[in-house]
Image (cartoon, rainbow, N blue to C red; front, side):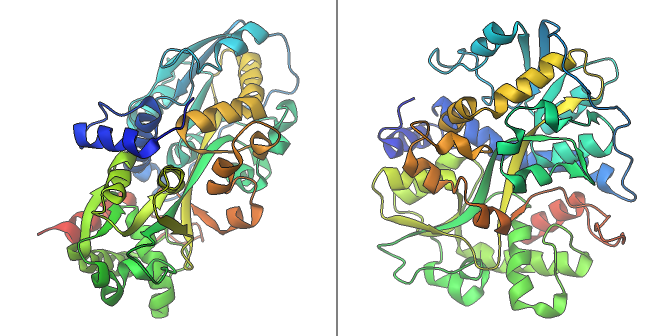
Amino acid sequence: MSRSDPVSRVSRAARGAAKTLRGLSVRHRVAAVLAVLLVAVVIVVSAARDGEDPPVSTARPLQTLGPGEGSLNLVTMPGMVENGGSDERVNWVVPFEERTGCKVNLRSADSAKEMIDLMSNPERRYDGVLAPPEVADQLIDTGHAAPVNADLVDGYKQLASRLRNLYKRDDTVYGVPYVWGANLIMYNRQVVRSAPSGWADLFDPERAKRYGGRLIMRDTPLVLAEAALYLRSSEKSLNITDPYALNREQLDAAAEVVRGQRPHVREYWSEPAEAVSAFAGGEAVLGQVSSYQLDVLTRAGRQVAGIVPEEGVTGWVNTWLIGARSEHPNCMYEWLKWASSPDVQQQVAEWAGVAPANPEACKGDRLDGAFCAAHRVGDDAYLKKVIFARAPGKNCRNGRHECTDYNDWIRAWERAHAR
């Protein structure tokens, strides 16, 4: 897949369809859908995260591999499993079918609710699902995902250990990480002469107004987590420890920070192309982005740079889960091995513009070295710093139930943006 002239391709798309995915390349549509899905998904699961955590699946992991059953039914995110339908050159499904004899049937879920409904419906027996973090937590904690026998997944131990540990309950494995990303701060080096250091450059009123009207932020209540990270350093009396576990006082304080920042923000973006276009056209000079936008603009020769916020960086992981009612477990394990392999990880990363979970994808002549560096693939020290997203819930994960849930976050976000 060609990566030439990325800014011109994205800018044309943004001008032609600023508020729709039409006109974007498939790669950019994939990234946009991922961003939207990450925001929408937490709404669905907040109720299940309230109160006591429900028991995880009672299904037992497969002990030995047998012959494939000839079929495999998967629920996936749009564009993240390609069979040549979008571009005949992008196809890692048919080679899998030819190698294993497992015919893949894909069901693309357009929303988090649909994904959860499909996997939790007892009359449907999907073998596996590619889930963003909050969906993964929901399915694991409500017993709709089966434990994984990692010893049967060739390549599992090649996956970044930090990512693998996110989907364990005690010593039981429930997920096989696929791709990941982080939220960074990007700035125009020609305009912002003094490099920013962290979230304070976006949230502190005196710093934010220096570039008033030229800031951009993600359009999601999850921005409250970044505001909480800023407060964790600037308002220590709030005693914030986990930005995704906020009590009422802490959440209100984060919302007040967002309210104070709002007059200085030019655009709250939901589609990655919007952020790219804003920087490419000079409308934005400082803001919150992902590694994707930084990579695209850097490759295009734009004078931008990115930093990891000193207060903490947030991120996400999409992972494969086995359905608790899987009808084709042997084919599912073959798929987990296939999806974890360096060659397939290379294809996913190039197509979707995301970081592969398997650092081996960046070795040899697979992924471009600049791409891997931009996405910090294989950088274990960096991964340890990332605070990976989950749905806020009443259970603070410390044995107490005084935290706010995601519905509270939505209301706080809306109040902060009310005119």
